[in-house]
Amino acid sequence: MYADDLIRLLTLQDANTRTVLVGTALLGVASGVVGGLAILRRRALVGDAVAHAALPGVCIAFLIVGERDFGFFLLGALIAGIVAAVMISLLRLYTPIKEDAATAISIGSLFGLGLVLSRRIQDLPSGNRAGLDGFIFGKAAAMVRSDAIWIGTAALAVLVVVILLYKELKVLCFDRDLAGAMGFRVLPLDLLLMGLVCVCVVVGLPAVGVVLMVALLVIPPAAARLWTDRLAVMLVLSGGFGLLSGVLGTALSATMPTPSGAMTRGWPTGPLIVLVAGSIFLVSLIVSPKRGLVARWIAPRTRMPNGAAAGGQGVAP
Amino acid sequence: MSQQVASSSSRVFTASSAPVAVEVHDLTVAYDRKPVLWDIDLTWPGASPTGQGVLSAVVGPNGAGKSTLIKAILGLVRPASGRVTIFGEPLSRVRKRVGYVPQRETVDWDFPIDALGVVLMGRYGRLGWLRRPRSADRAIALRCLDQVGMGDFASRQISQLSGGQQQRVFLARALAQEADLYFMDEPFAGVDAATERAIIDLLRSLRASGKTVIAVHHDLQSVPEYFDHVVMLNMRLVASGPTQQVFTSANLQATYGGRLTMLERVGEAMRRAAVSESLLPVGSQPTAHAAHAGRAVPAEYAAGTL
Image (cartoon, rainbow over all chains, first blue to last red; front, side):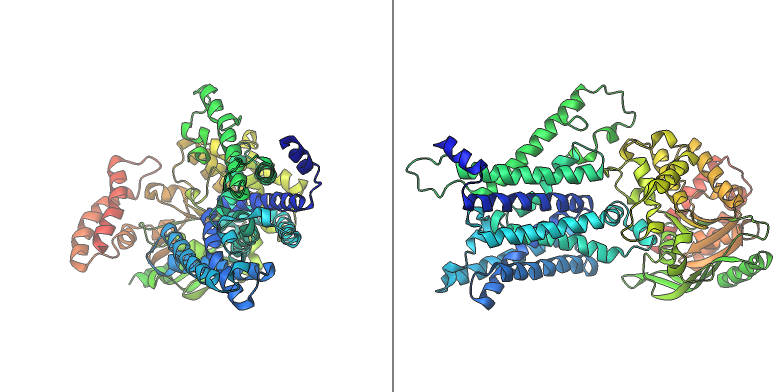
């Protein structure tokens, strides 16, 4: 029975599973690549803020349109995400509040607003059609063909931008002042990178949910960083880890037997995707040849005169 | 009074060497409405008719606006007022002729990139948007690494380099920009003696090939030995011109004691005169006395402002 499910899944016979699988895989690739740049630019938490801010955006979009329209939901989430990013910047620039606190303020207040609005909507007669609870924790299994097409389009656009502007994004992330001194427009570039994060977050929300979306942006690149010291390789690996997480997470949720007789709705896809990503990170942390824990235990301590640099700070958390 | 010192000395200097590398007019920069630079008028000379370039030090206490001055000239911070011309043109038209070495601590040295990759970034400005570095750029980057004695470290991840080596990689990146004018923010900060030698040799060879190098510098003892031109800054311009004419005890006192009250100033002046007299004529070897004075200055400056 279990083996049958697995075969059906892997041979992509079931159209619904196929949709979910392709959607989560593409989402994994896009957020892995963009997340890699975001963590190097120290902007990982912006993804979290955008994700949380997206909930009120989606709610307001529903209140305006009155039905579950993925395109409008994305638009609402995108606008709300931009509002959050701007809010963080304004708090940081014009008040004594530091960036981490500014991010937390934005996350908390916008998510609170989102929860209030979504409860109001679910009390409406048409509210149950909104499917808003899916946005909070993610509901990958409910993904339909058009959702997957949205994700695919977004992933393609994101990858094209990263490939075209690879050199510019690289110098932005490493040395913003040099980029500016050389005449690159750093503010638009920075906003573009934040925009890419926004796009990934927003298309990923229905599948992975507000709460876990940041994990998909941060964990695959953090794992990839452990395997390589080259940015291009890191981004490719990160996209690969994201893809693997999407595929394996979806496969597990579709095929793992649920406890018989339980009042269960099956295994949740989004959390499983994140758990797979977390496992990849854990394995990388232990066995990666350059920065893994095992390698560091084995390595002769005298190899690196500058001890602090040998392990790299990337491993620390 | 300090303004007079500035204008008269720069006039003397520009009269002796015609071309001008950088001209700063009425530059004022403020962060959060607090002025960091106030009404700076300043000229840096370009190469002399004999093809000799200029090494210029920008000195001043912590918070004097040295880095901000460079960033404002490079368009990295927006000035409240004023304008800058480089080689007689606005920055946007001569960017490719301007190289920049930021402070070493401003970047993440754990970034996934090797030394050659960092130097290759120096080529990005010439490439412009969308174009990728080619093998010719790669060859230039390798040559620049060789020039700073780091050729063997091309494929080394940058976190595995010592502080001095990282600074050399930064200099190689500036060389790869193939500029005529270089701004360097504390190129000597935290480097070992061997790297300091290597860097000053490099700066001298840049000067010999007609380049103008403007460096924020902290070690007052080495200013007369390393730099032929000096800019003394403390929010306002105190003085600028040839080191021999401008780097005087009176100007040092005005630079580092600039914000003390009048009463404190009198006492400071008497004490400082003795200190800076022993400080000025020294060569490369810092004496214990001079080193102490160099450290004490920012603390006094801070005490004076608080």
